[in-house]
Length: 352
Image 1 (tube, one colour):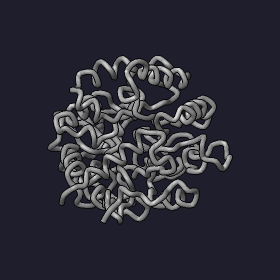
Image 2 (spheres, one colour):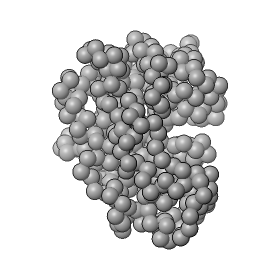
Image 3 (cartoon, one colour):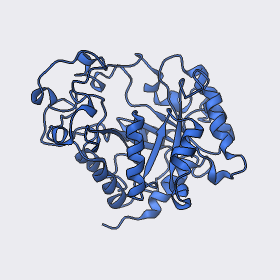
């Protein structure tokens, strides 16, 4: 199937510009999930079920989580531990002793061991689905869809390896990189500057603005301003930040993060992106990992409220909140809600 690259180009333009199709908010499927989906999260089958880039698409782009095996195979998996999403406990009987324990931890097992695990469905029933290699998923998205991968990588060692794979595959135009763990100088010297000019033009990097950006703890505005200062003298096309993902991690973060959202929206150079998923009372998020200390953030987090993320001041103008992508487990319902508020005109990037 020939992929119309103009579709992907338009999606990238929307995601990286504040003025191109300003009334369009992009939906991102969290872990390749959607309401009614039956395939295991982060599986190749779940990704294909999204029908990305078609008239039947469940979402515009897909958010995926990446891990690395003990012998350096890079694969798609959300948790730091393998217990919740696979039949690991059946294959490797034992009991974890806490979230720092190596039992079940992703980087303490070889690819032969990891690839032999069976994935579980959202209802935790077993399947014959296997954990996919990142390179296989990347090639599928690049060659058989017109969509993008939003990469969620917590381990910077994994971030480095994924960056190198994407460079080798000439796929910077297919992946959104994001992290709160790099300073401007680290990103520029270690990642961006070594690229060719052609690759620099393709790379999509969204710094995550949180309460704990490197060297700017508890001062998100200072972190944002440092990234924006990279535009000085280099022209808008060489700004290192192609957008920002705001990381609401607790109920009290808003007072420090919302001024950053306001600054981004007022400048209108790029867009504000957010992670939403379901509210933290949705037990399916980490059920099964309680024995290793991986469960849940603050209850009743405002991230569970789409309207709040889009319009935190409840003004009805939708000029003070997210205007880029929203990552969610229910992208289809999100799209329907966006239509009701005029933030979802017919999307030209979805075709038969």
